[in-house]
Image (tube, rainbow, N blue to C red):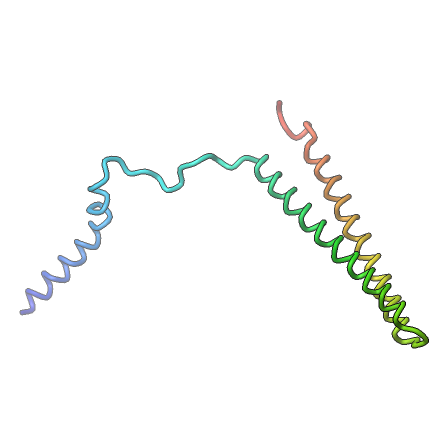
Length: 123
């Protein structure tokens, strides 16, 4: 009985060790799962530009919505000083947000021109 347990343990361990070879035995030539076109720096740059433009567009839309919302609140505030102050601060924050987003766009555009210098490449 002891010998049967030992032989079965060794047999199972051997089968587990040989399992990858047994699975690939059916294929004529194994193919790599990583086959395909390589990713280039242009692809990465295009992806970053697309994401940055999308985020800038969404941020500007949100800033405009805050400015309009603040303007509507200011018009509806009437004589209430607290509501008028909250509306003014919402308008100012919307303008500041729009300026920050546009500044980020300018910074990204500047970095894009710096990265495209041919000084970094031995062409």
